[in-house]
Length: 506
Image: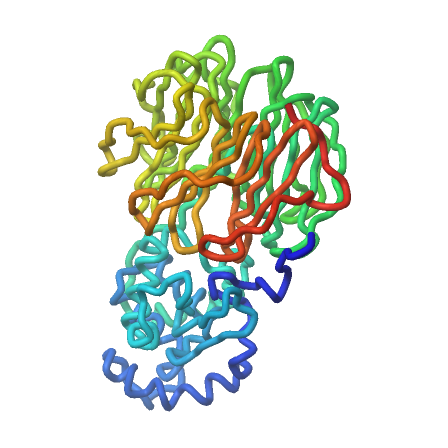
């Protein structure tokens, strides 16, 4: 673990911090900034002096947030995040603990390293800061870059935020944040409700499990959980914050779940017969939905209610047999499923949010593996590997796609992807000879050339820490290793998670 930046050192690589040591306590901050906010609130059309409530800093966040475009519950959430970030002080700044050295600025504490496109004049202007936060959060659909949201620290401010929005007097609906599916495969990782990553790896003797002992920090030792050997895995978060893990091999499907958010886990429980691959996603209403492939195509199960019981397995209307299955979420909240085998690539999608599914549609020829991610603007990106490298398709609008484009990269590789704190998609590929990665040159932008990322292996999976840093897990017959971001384009070396190698993974 030498060189791994932990705890306070990387409490926010984004600069979106949970604690503002450079700021006075909340009560002191309110007393100081009310006089500063008075002309700003007056300019925003709010009366100052008639009532102490109208001089509350949260009123400024509500007004500029509304002007930026948030509405209803989305506006309440945005105000709560700003309260957690800056106490709604437009002059707030922080440099403590930021790596690389950088400054968090303004109401939504936009960092000048990860978002250099936002200059100081904008960052410390209340309305401009709100406009940029609206853009970075994809109109309030993605608050994952803000660690106060990831850690749930905004929740303590929801009452104050609702009161500020109510005083504003502009009721109306707004979009809820989207919960995107996690990568599936032989190693998977997701954040618990408290922000700590948990990782599962499939060995011959069942599934092994490790977890961060502190947010953004060091890892526990591996523990063996039993369950299906040589399994394909998926993981998703229930509406109440409890993680649920799914494992399938040729004989059996099983699942286990946290008994409380960030808490202990249940034993393995039966989830069906065997199959080839499994993926899990979260509907907009919080219900989990699971897809699995097998010799007769692709089947799915879904929760009847959030956190509730499960339907029986149902056919999905076809789909490629024994395929690699991956899931993503469209910008409007509909789930999409992609399935690839050696001869066929197809996808299907919900025809309405939380609704039924389309027929399977052709998406290209066969291949080896697939990963799907989303741009900062919500458009989906699909990468598929095959015998001549990695190819790429992307949405040109919510309903149309580009053609397939070659990118190079390792032949017949395992694929994974995630987003850097500034919204750029990064893609990782590994085969028996090499690991490589590519990244967008900017948010929603074209990609750089493939670059070396290490030696070969058997599986790869990427996820994001609570502070936004991507962490990558690579497996081989020697066990499980990981690398983590230390900056825009800098990474740690490969290392074991703890004092042992973890399970060998074929």
